[in-house]
Image (cartoon, rainbow, N blue to C red):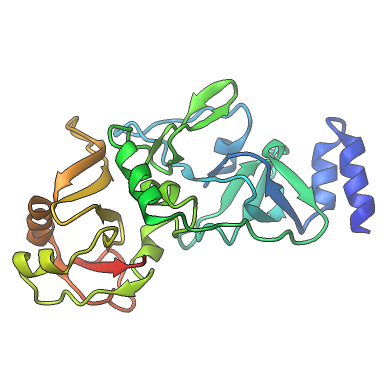
Length: 274
């Protein structure tokens, strides 16, 4: 049955895409090239017009799926036959968020495809990627510095905070800070002052809370991608580590682990993962 459906997809082409895609549901697919994934079906179509918010960001973009990303196809949204609703183990969407991608960017599979192969680069390679990202713009949902070509235009060329780390690790690390707060192992920081914290931090440690991540480069500097809606400096920047820690401690409290059940709390944690 699945083989016959796959053949139907090949021969229907543009004649009956909605019927053909509906016939495979539930089904599976793989991204053959970088594929932007959105949280509304209207944003995912090949000719979609993306509307920016007051910060200049397209908040409908969730992430850019890397080549080889496997998807479960769960629906064809009504009125958008060229778009598929999907799920992927490569991306844990926020609660209540649905994911949509242009069908033309995916290759259908009759059975569940293997997960995308992800191998953690050497630490020196990760450091190089982080440092060469400095100066790139902040892009909400961006995790591919070169962006993607959509409707003949280059779009989403830049990185958000967790996307900076995701790209530097070739998609090995979790894509969102909601998962990064529990990634790797905990560093005991509760009750520590600035000098004590600086002594504890190691290269590539994550200073993270649900909403942002700062990556330690060495004992004096850190790198992050920041969004400044007031028109100030934003994008990927290197900052003095001591100065940045003082700023964080003015607004947040150090915790050894992310509080159970906490959402946007006033804590931060340090996670060691390499």
